[in-house]
Amino acid sequence: MTGSQVVVDTAGGGTGGAARWRYELDAYLTRCAAPPRVLGRGRQVTARWLVEREWRVGAAELAVASNNVSFGVAGRHRAVLLRNALHFLYPAEAHLARLMPRAFRAQIPVVRRLAARADELVVPSTAMADRVRRCLPRAAGRIVVRAHPVTPVGVRRPAEVPFVLVPVVPGPYKNLLPQLRALVRAMDALGRPGQIWVTARPDQLPPDLLAQPRIRPMGRLPHAALADLWRTAMAAFYPSVVESFGYPLAEARVYGVPVIAADTAQNREIAGPALCGYRAGVEGELREAVLRSAEPVPAQPRAFDPDAYFQQLLGIHRVPGSTVSRGSR
Image (cartoon, rainbow, N blue to C red; front, side, top):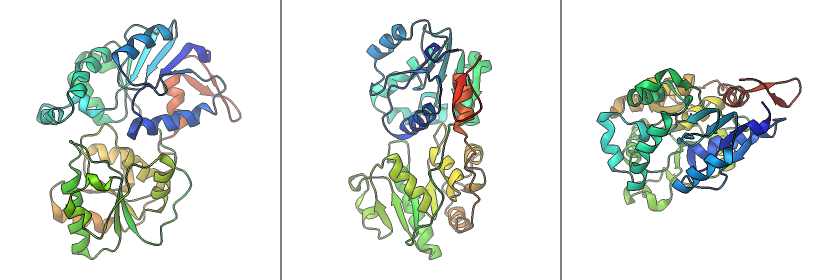
């Protein structure tokens, strides 16, 4: 296929995991001899955009929707990246949807209906595949697990002042604040030195956490600034459990940063040897995980290889040298 025969819609998601994925895509495209057509930069995923992109794709051989919402009719072959666990909650988690804005809840049936029309449903973890399979059993044979691409920027150089990085923005389903309190108690009980740097604004934290001398609110950070923190952190803390992937788990793995997180199959799959697991709500196990986080972890910088990922997603095969060319799917 030529580049014009592959179209990628990147609308939506200006921050968080979607922005992180686009960073990897853009870096990959600089090495691509015949890049795909990219639509939707700077656009929001609205009903108007979903209609507009269908006619803009034209007779493309492959139409890739990177934003959870599959193309409906455009493209000879349609692929969609499903990477929001809130679109595919289990019954026991249904209350989390009620915490989200009404506009988000309205997305859920649309995402599911259009996903059923895709030829390939790409998910970033086995756990996310299970979620999608439960909601869309007829699509089970079209679900493909491909972990998101993650490239480290430089190598570790621990900071002179040790800190635990908490790369989580508070949200209604994150359960971050009680977990931060538990981390402070665990570090205090162990006499573990170090601060806790969290990517939240001061106004997103309650007074008791703002008063903690360990806590340093950093606010939302661009990729370059966050990459610098990954290189210098002594450990990371990632208490979220309702996720499709968990970029902080993958970042910890590629940089060789111990990550304190719930001991789940998904977290073991993504974090690998970097995981210092504990059972959520068991503070004794959290303290043990904090202790283990002092042990060195080998970096695995190629654990989430972007070249292999995008070659598979876009039907591209590498040729000798630094560029890639498009081959048959």
